[in-house]
Length: 176
Image (cartoon, rainbow, N blue to C red; front, side, top):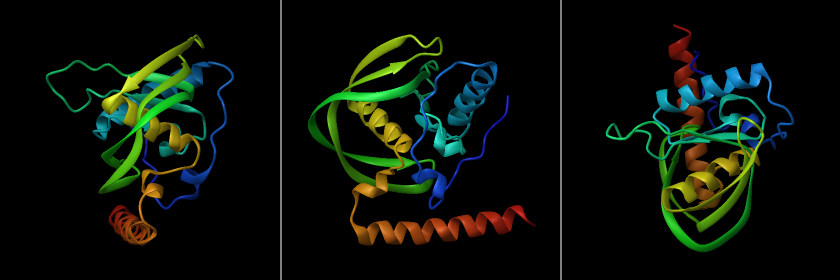
């Protein structure tokens, strides 16, 4: 099992629209194992493939992640699509691709998501609360959108500058 590198904003790969998955291959299954393990290793509750540099329409979510009292329960959503949404709620979000930054974002309160499982069987998830937020956040990644796109332009610019410095500092540390 390999832990994958997280792509940090601003990186052009985070702004691209991901391609649908049309077949389940052994290579994809191996990727999904590494992908899921990466989410846990990085203390995320969700992860989208573009966040590890893979422009495919797949996300993994486990809203119990980080809660040691609960068992792991990752759910893989292949080609997820929000088919309906209702209400609005404000929620403080963070993102593995925008580390150490948290901002309040307005999201839909409930969502219905159609997706496919690892056997390409269609399933529907009706979600509210944390799961609804996580689904919207991760599906946004598949469409080249980040949670910081929902905040003011000034805050966005400040965060982008912080992330550029963060990446520069990270690169200089790795090259020592």
